Length: 491
Image (cartoon, rainbow, N blue to C red; front, side, top):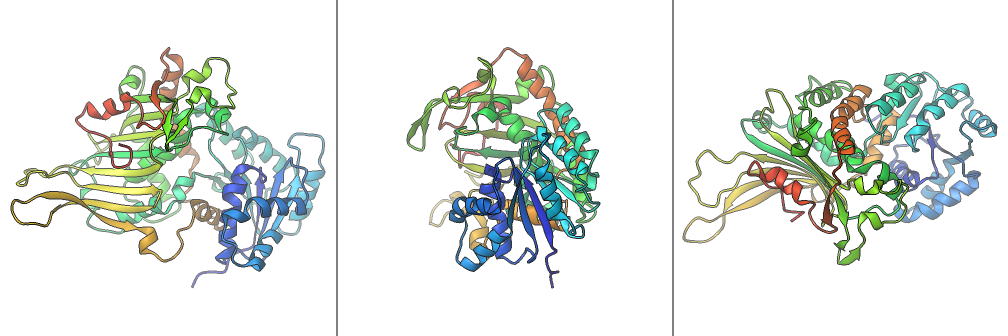
């Protein structure tokens, strides 16, 4: 029998912003609808918006209600009643907001207290210092940091130092929403709760691994951010490296909060560095130009509105990145891990493809290697591609046939969104799916030399038309070893 939910105060800094309205509040409503929030749990938004409680509830009613199933008006009214708003001025002279939030939290020190920083990373340190100055950081308090955590190793260390001066490491939850997806969590179950896979989960049986995160959208509304980030910082340093870690990690001794994170850090530290002249050989960057996406003519990246970069700097921003990584240990020696991510691709798709080696000697023509495909989005699920005989008389004709596990078809329960799982893990103090400081910094340590080489060189990203499957260099990256990208969704 599950324990009743504990009372909590979830304070969202940046609580009127896009992330809060599109992801956090809908996720919290679903948690409330499923009975996972205690009756006394509150959600307190902090921003410079100048709103009172009624204003914020009206904003949530207008912007969130249409994206969630409100089949019970009383439940929706109850959820709105949990919402509060406090206007604050970080670093300013007006302390009225801090006095109000202090009053709201007074006498509730025994409740779970979570500060969620849905704001730019440069605000993390100042906000935490303000919390400390206001006496709001209790020993049981937690703080959630949204990505990106810095732009490089030095800035990530600086943010970690600033937040770590106020909160202990055990109180800090660095969030990556990819780790809350059902398929990602099922990857661990698939590997470590089934006996047939682990004996062949190594270089003797696996030829290579592909990890893809492709988007059909460009950068409308995010151009300013992307001018200063690019695909490598935005997607590879966090999302794709996290997935690589879960594929490549050793079996932990137990399903413990630190055991899994320990094994992930070992993978990052085992990655073969890509430095200097090797960057051109093992890393590819691209930038989309005008083309056709979804049957509609769309502009190239340089013509998207909202640029904040200095003149000419946008020409160097990558909207596509592909890398060949290697994990230098006994299990994975010689097995390449291909990572790619891009905007304005022909299909929206995030997946992991584990390509097994071909049979040592095929007695049938048309045989192809087995593949395990783990789909994160859309339509989360797992497919194992096996060779089977096509029905019919005459010669044996082979055809790849998938054994499919679709979560939507197999389980009658609603598949929760990633933020639902992660928010509940924060509220219950379960850090397994969050990144530890050494993990974040190990990822930056591997990524930094690639960024440095790209930014110091005179070359610009390779152009690719919007709606295509990326620059030619990405296909050459895998073709050099006689391989090809899994083309089921991007061909």
